[in-house]
Image (tube, rainbow, N blue to C red; front, side, top):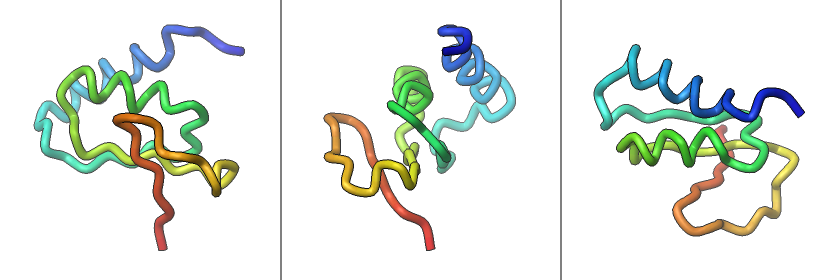
Length: 69
């Protein structure tokens, strides 16, 4: 559903507006983690995906899932 390029385009926008790669980014309602993957490809290492629908999600390689209090 939706434009498949949306994650790449949004990651490009984030990289343009926030070029510092050490920023902490929370991907809320992350779905399958495509935005996190795009941001990691651009050098962002502090990216966390958060989606309450995946409470028992297993960590996939390179992905971080967490809950915020």
